[in-house]
Length: 128
Image (cartoon, rainbow, N blue to C red; front, side, top):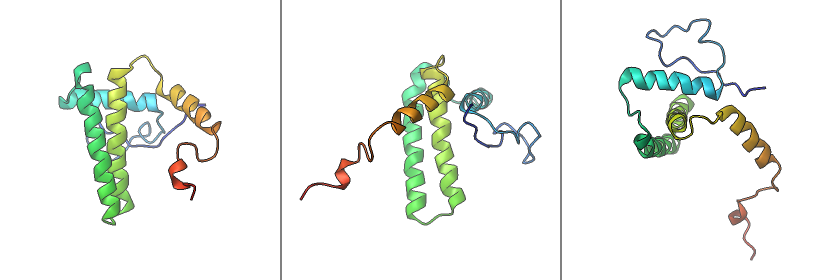
């Protein structure tokens, strides 16, 4: 079963959502929507642009952190986090176009579930 996320279609020219747009999308469908948006808007769209897209994702992550620190609304924080997802998925379609991100997500989630408790977070409990 694919992981589904409910998001509006970013290509809609109106604020109203169609019945199809109200459906949930998986990561692969999001990549397709992002690709269409990128092409329509003339954004960076070449493999050599991947580092830029990843940098933009990092910048958006910083904006999400700042919004949280400033006590912005949950909607504002979520919007910044969605920008991160947009850039990461956009980079993924150029960096690894043949990889199904839904399947990769499921495999990675399973891998993380099999790890020991608090793996990678040993810094939280340093021995005295």
